Length: 114
Image 1: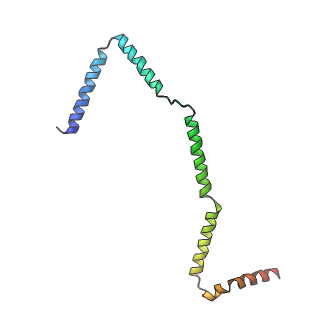
Image 2: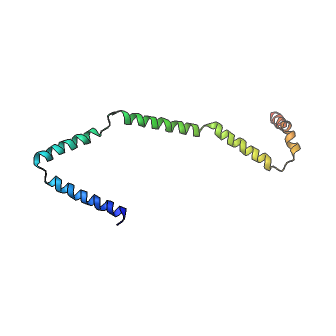
Image 3: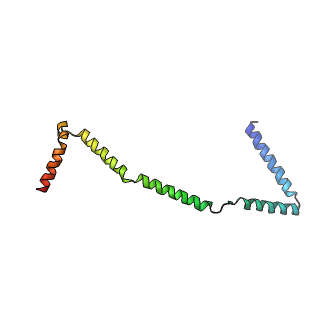
């Protein structure tokens, strides 16, 4: 037999013995055991009743903060700046064009004003 088979056989034997023992209990002892079992189950209830609402509030605040930091506008502006850099790197104009970029910006403003 494998060790797991031995374990399983032990568990089955223990179950049988406990069932036989519980059937042999008198009514008074069975009643006392039922009362003790009920008390033990009631004792499992959380000792701090306000713990669940507080935990829910903490989780909600954390979720709001995550959403706030993920959807901030500066992150989106950084992405736009990255796209502009990619456009500059992939453009077909010569580098001299970018040396005179301020002039072209001024010229566009002057034409729009006049």
